[in-house]
Length: 213
Image (cartoon, rainbow, N blue to C red; front, side):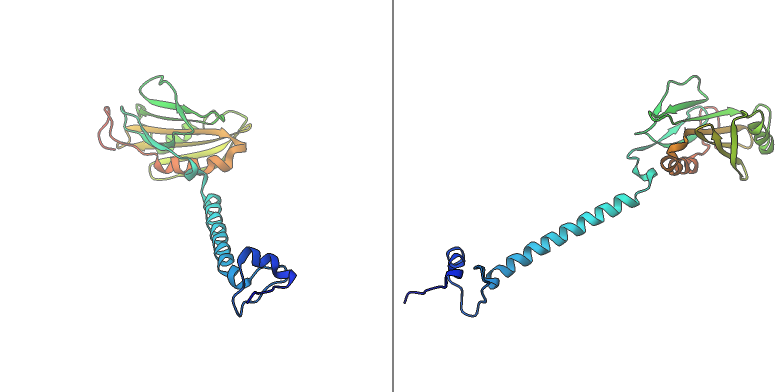
């Protein structure tokens, strides 16, 4: 027996074949019963893709500026043993002027210096702090000071530059270790976390001219 379909279903039959008994047809020709599994698969794939994209964007948004720097290395002064971690994909070491330390610069105007000297004046921490505060430039403004058992910290601004200084007394008062960081104030949201990590990693150590700290 030849099946005869209404004109509205002719196109659907041409594409999909005759509908099985019990299948509900749409006016326009597509059979829901046959298309439903494929539609569900596409919906699931699309939803899964949105979920993966959302997780990726959330991870990127919560990544701190310090963690965003891809390569962190440790610089160590071989003579005094002073060391600090720094983002090597941002800072470039400069030729050393002497064996007391090293200066690093970034293309955006930031820089830092790590150095150490013998405490030939036998200064205690109070004397080191007084010397660090003495004869500062008139356009400088100290905005934070902190002090621990063997270290002092100064942070402030000078024109459009922010600076951070950490002075560490080690080796039973024989060595003064210094970390000085400067960067454009407009980049504080980027460099604030970087300075925090560098400061926490800054420490005294054993070098060619020193024993254990």
